[in-house]
Length: 124
Image (cartoon, rainbow, N blue to C red; front, side, top):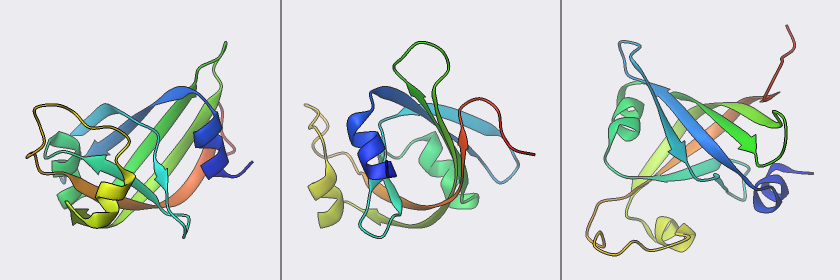
């Protein structure tokens, strides 16, 4: 199963971890990524801590815990490649609208997947 199918057909939740330029870490609940045609990933972000951290440190990790018994899921190590502010592509990827925040700035942050590991355990 490719990753686009995996995220479209697997229920669960994700955590995106970032760090600022000094190494101070943050983790936030994030929806599943949008998988673009070229295989890169995109997340829609607000102007908050995760987005702020990515301005000085392009590296992130995404953990996806499957909605099942046990510890099934995947971990991904990512590198930011670009971002767009309120672009047409971002608008086309929106999964839902939130009332009261129509004027909030949104960023489409695009990543390259550097490595994929299982949720638990990893090769040395």
